[in-house]
Length: 103
Image 1 (cartoon, rainbow, N blue to C red):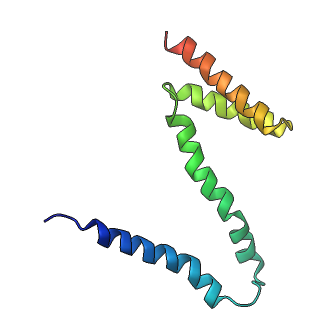
Image 2 (image 1 turned 180 degrees about the vertical axis):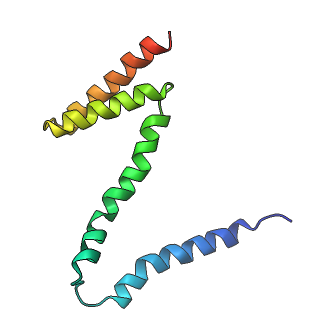
């Protein structure tokens, strides 16, 4: 039995549409619950972190290089470095680590 790709696409489209439209139609007044507001505030950041952090470790040839770049990036960002400088220095850390560890 061959899977029907169009059925999969239709289900995916319906679920995506429902996720986006139902909150707009069901919730008409502002959310007053502090816990729910706090949860909804952090959802985008958590989603970005869940997609980004595993890729940092798996995108390099040596996972240690990705981990070191992650640590360097966190330290630089905590010290107030710009996004461009953090990304350049993290790339440099990965390059140097892979140059040392792979040869």
